[in-house]
Length: 202
View 1 (cartoon, helix red, strand yellow):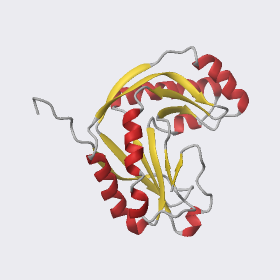
View 2 (cartoon, one colour; view 1 turned 30 degrees about the vertical axis):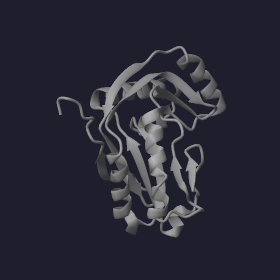
View 3 (cartoon, helix red, strand yellow; view 1 turned 180 degrees about the vertical axis):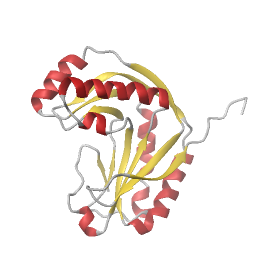
View 4 (cartoon, one colour; view 1 turned 180 degrees about the horizontal axis):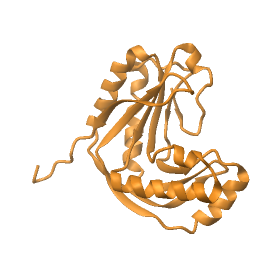
């Protein structure tokens, strides 16, 4: 069973012996620094500390499963990555999720939709519980700030809807993180590489 990223994880997952796994896409260093500068600017303007506490990334999926199947999860994610070549990600301008977050728009959604579609196949393999379904992003984006109150969101959207931002980076790998509770910091599990697109020269 698949649910999408606008849904919250069940708050009792860590009491059930489950581990949360977070699959994401990171920008290259140059784009990372430019997005981080935007996040710092948001912090200075609105005082929202979470903007600078979270690194620039694009969420792909969340899994809640027993840690003993981590090997199966990693194998499944790499198999999904093997089905798709590396691709360019275009970032352009800003938008928002109503009263929740300000983000940079991802222009080419189709490669991320293909990733999500293929990740759906992992549910049976990794023994996902119907109570804790896999959460897949339904609209790829790069968050600037989240957990905003309604007033801050409205003020920020008025400004950010006028701002311009445009960058491009090649996505060559996905990264899997994990944690055992909300109080723990994320730990890196592994990187999963997308094959290089083949052409006449490779």
